Image (cartoon, rainbow, N blue to C red; front, side, top):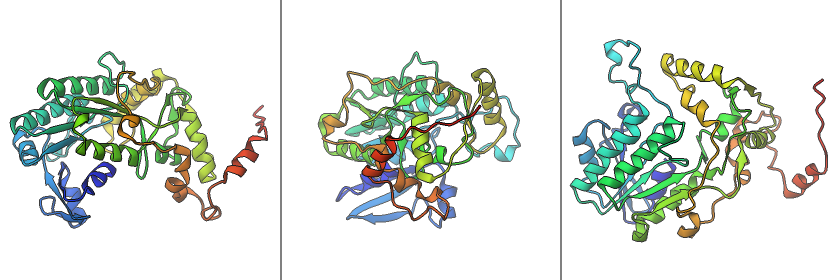
Length: 337
């Protein structure tokens, strides 16, 4: 939604957003085919689509000049080994990573090519690699390849793990449910601000020189997950517990939970990704080539995490640079013997 919101604010533009969950929009009193929001003299519409329905995809893109593919899934929702009542057959719990990242991306690219649309901007992922031990990264890489074969002018965007409102990084660490890990939270990456990613996608809308290019969008600082968890704990004035479980135990458990529970928990592939550090493609372009300076994560933790504080600390302002320097003068020793 950050990306859609940023793009739709371009003056004089009409934005059509595909929505595969129209029922959710109706819960808020909106019909997907009728949502009409004026933002800075722009027109913003939401259209219903089905990733397996070619006609609905074509209807969503055929009047466009530029198409963004932001469709993705970070865990599989295909339950081929389990039997569910017929009434749940169309509930959306039937997509594998291959279905979304490869086959779905292929249908979207074919629709773009069929109607001779000027631009396709395909949002992939950091670490996209066909030889990766992670199925998520493998399918992302195959999706890039398939899209480029159909529409060679495709712009490929590989964002790092994103932070912002309703993200799956800061909020996950600040919540109480992120209890178990498998790699002592040693995975390293360059977290990127969602607003910066949205701004980059918006720049690509106007700059035809970005066609056929690949962009790695990442933040200015490399963190381990443990270092980010420490920043989160300091900001919310709480100590979240993280228990390390051997990969051989957590991975099959996560796979089973993902198959049995209808709500988002974790998956075997997410456990696998805990052991993979982010690798930057040296041949890809970056924020620098778009004239954008990405924001630093530690400058936004107060903005996004204040709601996790207790009432006793809620109104305290973020730590000043002087207070941060003073804290570094002290060595904190924890006696756990």
